[in-house]
Length: 210
Ligand SMILES: N[C@@H](CCC(=O)N[C@@H](CS)C(=O)NCC(=O)O)C(=O)O
Image (tube, protein in one colour):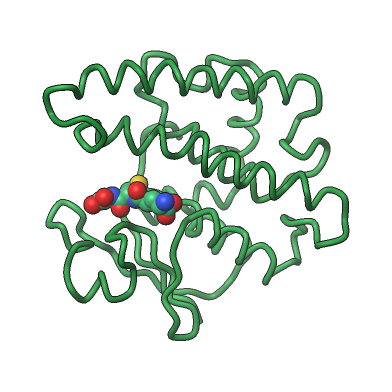
C-alpha cells in the first residue's frame, strides 16, 4: 500500500496522477504547506528536504517526484508508461526524465521561490531570468515534438509526458505559458483529456488549466 503526502497543484501532482492513471490502491495525506507542515520534525524524518511529495511505500518513505514517477511506472507496467531496460526507448525515457528534472523543474523552483537563489531584493531579476530560460526550454521541447512527436518518446505515451504536463501547467500564469507553443499545446490538450486528469483535479480541488 502507498500513502502519498501531497499539496494541491504541487510536485506531488505527478505521483498522484500516476497512482490514479495506473489504478494503484493508495491513501492520501494532505500537507498544509502554508502552515509549514513540511518543515515539521515528523515530516523531515520522512523527507529531509522538507518538500512534497513523499510517497510512503510499504512503510518506506521515498521522495523526488521524477523518481517516484519512474518507480510507479516500472512497478505497475500494465499501461506501458515506461519502456523496460533493454528497450532502446528506455534510454530516451531516462534522458527526458532527467532532462526535465535537471533543466526545467529547478527553474520553476526559482520562479516560485525567487528569494532562494538571490534574496528578496533580487526576486524580480530572478523571475525575469527564469521566465526567459523556461521559454527557451519550451521552444526546445516544442521543436522536438514537431520533429518526433506527438509524445516525448514519439508515438508512445510515457511517464515523461505526465511529468511534462505538470511542468506546463505550472507555467499557466507566466508571461508566455507553455501552451503558446503548438506542439506543447497539442500534448497538453491530449493529456488534459485523460479521465485520470479529471479525477486528479477533483481530488486536489483544482480548477485552473482544466
Ligand atoms: N525536487 C523536488 C522538489 C519538490 C518541491 O520543490 N516541492 C515544493 C512544491 S512544488 C514544496 O514542497 N515547497 C514547499 C517548501 O519548499 O517549503 C521534487 O521534485 O520532489
